[in-house]
Structures are given as C-alpha cells and as structure tokens.
Amino acid sequence: MLFVVTMLTMMSGLAARMRDNAQRLTRRVFLQDALVVVQFIALAMAAGLPVEIFAGFVRVRAAGLSHIGFWPWLTDYLLRWTVDLVFYVIGIAAIMALIRRLRRAWPALATLVYVALYATYVLISPVFIEPLFNVFTQLREGPARERILSLARANGIDTDGVYIKDASRQSVMLNASVSGIGRTARITLNDNTVESTPPAELEMVMAHEIGHYVLHHLVKQTVFLGLTMGIGFVFIAWAMRSLANAYGARWNVTGIGDPAIIPLFWLLVALWGFAAMPINNSIVRTHEAEADLFGLNASRQPIGLADFMLRDADAHPLSPGPFVEWALYTHPSPARRIETAMRWRAEHLPR
Image 1 (cartoon, helix red, strand yellow):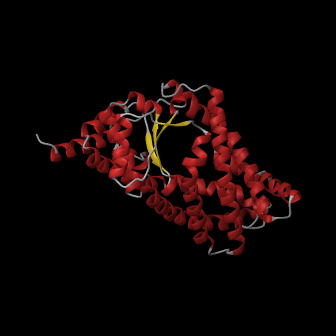
Image 2 (spheres, rainbow, N blue to C red):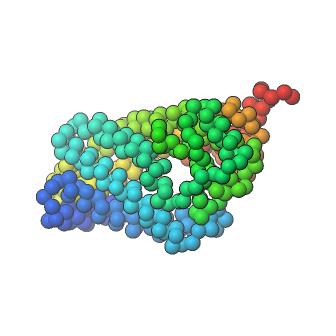
C-alpha cells in the first residue's frame, strides 16, 4: 500500500504540489520539510487505514484477543500516530537538512539522529507517552508486590513502586515490562496479567522483565538498531541519488535536497525496515532468550515459564518453522522457551 501511495504521489506531481504548498506558507526550509512530512504521512495513513482496521481491529476481535470498541480503538490508533508523527517530523526534517549540507556524508550523521530520537522515545515513554493510552495505578500491598520489589532490589533496580496498567481495555494478552532508563525506570504489569496469572508464573514473568533492565537490553538494542539503520541509510542515499537523477525532471524534483523527495525517502526507509527485519528480530530475540535465562536464575520458576508459554499460546503457534521464527519472531518460539525452562530444571533442581 505504501509503495502504491508513494509512486502515485511522486508520478502525479502531488509531492511537488505538497512542496509548493509548504513554500507558500513559510520560507524556512526546515518548516517546509516538516509540512511535507505531515501532508504525506497523513495521506499514507488515510490510505492504509482500511488495512489497519482489518488487521488491528477486526481480526484481533474475531480471534477473541480484544474486546475494545471501534471508536476507542480508532482514538488510540490516531493518538499513537500523532505521537509518532512528532518524532517523524523532527527526524526527517533534521535528516533533510543534513542531506542538503552533506550530500555524500549525511548517512553517518543521520544514524546519530535516529539513535538520539529512538533513545529519547525510550527514555520519556514511561512518564509522558504511555499514560496517554492507559491508566497506571500502584499495585496494592501484598505478597505479589513484595516479591516483585524483592526481585528488583536483589538485582539492583532502585524502585519502590510496581504499577498496574489497565491494558485489558485494549487486549486480553498477558504482558509485563520494565521500561525506561535510569530514573524513568518503571515496573509495570498488565491488569489481566495480575488477575489471571498464578504466583509462580508472575514471579518468572517479572524476573524476565527485570533481566532486560539489568542486562541493559534497551541500550544495546538502541545501539544495534542504530548500526542496522546506518547501513540502511547508505542504501537509501544511493537509491535516492539514482532515482532523482533518472526521474527527477519527470517528478518535478530538483535533487535529493528537494522537500518533494520526502515521500520517496519515507518509502525507502520502510523498504529497508522490511529487508532488515530478520536482522533486527534476531537481535531482539537474542535479548529475549538472555532474559529468559536471567529470569530462571533469579526466580527459579521453570514450571512458571513453561505454564505461562502454554497459557499464552493463543497468540502464536507453539512451534513455527525455523525460517518463520528467524524472519518474523521477536521472541524465541513458545516451544523453544519451554525447552529452555525444562533444560534449566533438569540441570538445577533435584530430581
């Protein structure tokens, strides 16, 4: 869908008209870039909305994984796009400024822009972004709260709060997280996870999430994804130059620094994201496997991990093919995680 929208935007001259509209409104090139980004992303979102409704609302409800109504779902979807749009506008406008100043060397500095924005999103998300979509309350006093805080303290997380997220309004999926960095770190449980998860499973889930924090996975992931995106920017620079030289006159685009090239830039970023998906998924999947082992060692609840995987198996096949797992899965398959838990049990606990 994005490919079709982008090609129609470029070939019809709509991208050039978006640029002309922006230039009539302001003489500042940075703002012209920002206005083109807003115009094109709004168009792309509107064109892709029917697909998003089917995939993100209709199918999920049909599978029994969500009970949210259409208008609340649509409100959340549009709000998420609005939040993301702020980062897209800043990032693309900054990169376009680099392209105009550093025609050949811009991919290196564009990588730093990407890493800075990604890290900023991770840092502020628990405090400023996530509360836009859900209500967070403190987990009430009790054994579960004390055990979670004990796990956190034992592993170097300085916090005195465990938060409950009203995620059940959006999904029945079970989840938990330790999000943020430094002082913004926050231990969070979905309300349906607290209500339906036995103590052994809950302890293992939280130990897994604490493992992500202790092992600095967010920082590592930011670096690795930045490196992957840096390679992508080299490809994007070559593709933009080639296409602008070949079709620039036909599209009424003067070069790679023209704001009218932004739809093409966005498409190339998306294509690289698709091509690099197996690499990025492998990075995240490795971190998830490490967090499983950390969680097993911290909680000593292998049966908890195995049971949780079986109860949460409605969302994913237990054992997909090796290629599907490598290319599409951000976590080890449930079968592989159960195997890890049983191997740990066999090696650590008395027979």
